[in-house]
Image (cartoon, rainbow, N blue to C red; front, side):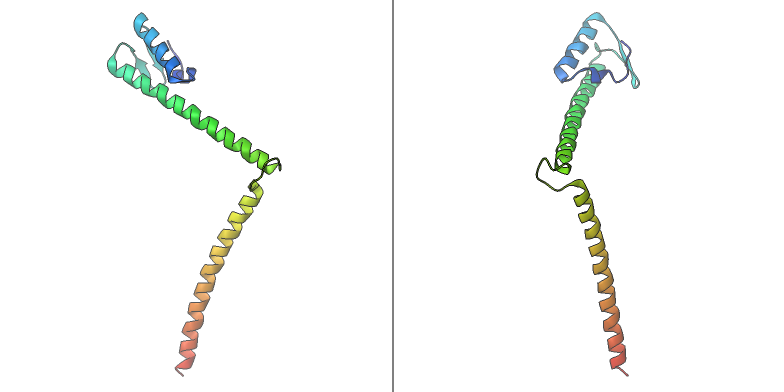
Length: 122
């Protein structure tokens, strides 16, 4: 069997492992962009199993990310309570500006204290 990202065929690792078992029983080699694998070989089967597990985990994270984007889209449209994306971006910008102003004020206080001390010595 030749394929690109074959492990993405499975929506869960059970399906993937059934495919590996079938290929192992029939002596079918599995080839993808990373190499050629023989499911009858323990190390190849182990590697292919890991690829299936990683694909299942990746699918889980993609679904979670999509749910988060959908939730944020509902918030942005006012259909759900929460902080809209534009508001969150504005808050982050204001927090950065506030931090910069605090640093500038600290420098000005230090400079003022220095010059006050210098004028006091004269």
